[in-house]
Amino acid sequence: MASMPRGRIVGTGSTAPKKILSNVDLEGIVDTNNEWIVRRSGIEERHISSKDLDETTTDLATRASRNALDMAGISPGKLDMIVAGTVTPDRQFPSAACMVQENLNATNAAAFDVSAGCSGFLYALSVANNAIQCGNCKTALVMGVERLSTIVNWEDRGTCVLLGDGAGAVVLTAEKSDSGILSTHLKSDGSLGNLLYSSEGKLKLPQVLSCIEQKSFHLRMEGNRLFKRAINCLTDIAKEALNHNAIKETDVDNMIPHQANLRIIQATAKNLKISMDKVYTNIQRYGNTSSASIPIAMDEANREGLLRVGATVLLVSFGAGLTWGSALLKWAI
Ligand code: COA
Image (cartoon, rainbow, N blue to C red; front, side):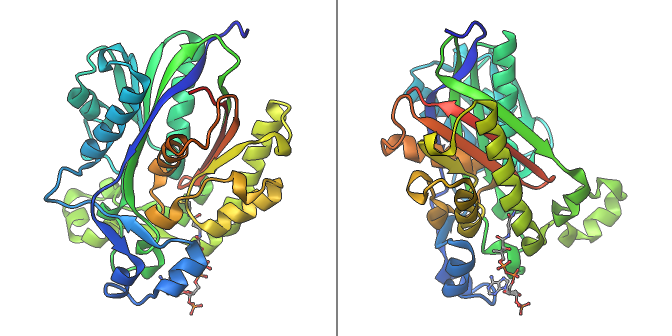
């Protein structure tokens, strides 16, 4: 038995907006086609939130959280920490985590957001797990939630076809056991922030100018410069997790990667010599949901019964920042 507690995932949950936007639908919006999108990214459709439904970032995160809490059989009052990975909170402040706290009536929790692009969920998971290891927290709710549809430029075919909305959440409890989160590794390179950004932070500009430049609000990406770097970073950070735990690639039972591009996932798996039948993908149905992609995929894999108790599960992410990260888990639900 380990002497220090570690975070153990005891519940998973996810949700996505009702409206599905297919590649064929997108053909009517920008100059693109289903064949290009599927061949270059693996994406077939994505969920997009609607104004007239309860599908704000807070709504989605609350729903995913309730699903995770139900599975865990834990009441919101027991939570002492709520951490949300997101770059699309409903408000600049208060945080998405605080807004979810209110909905859940989780009155005993400290709640805050973590901004780390598509790595937001793994950064949030790492923060919560560290708090558990320090003894500062016993029960945590960790979310990844995004509405990228609100910041995407719907005239830019290079990005709008790739992104989608959704939310995923996990409940962690402190356990002195060999199961749970074995390690987390995080990395960043701020010098490459210009490869993927939303320039809304025009907070640098006077308010009036930022209003005039409405379009500067949009997400911008240099996709092909990110592509190779994503594969290398994901491969390296996965190896770091495995080396740290003295685990061989062949001992990985399930890999759940950030879902940015099917070709990136396949190339990373190939580098790691992990066969694709151990790799969970749902990018076909969701597109890239940024911070939400890993917890949505983990919840689906869990509910489909693909994650057996004792399985070695590798999570890897890469995103704006640049940021990248990994977590190695011994599955225990
Ligand atoms: N439909 C049709 N054609 C499109 C298109 C679309 N939606 N988007 C771009 N194109 C065109 C380009 O204009 C370009 O045309 P050109 O050769 O005449 O200039 C051509 O397709 C190739 O574009 P390119 O960007 O080189 O394609 P790619 O093979 O690199 O695939 C991405 C593009 C974005 C799918 C891919 O680069 C990617 O997934 N990158 C990484 C994303 C990532 O990791 N993000 C960070 C983590 S979230």
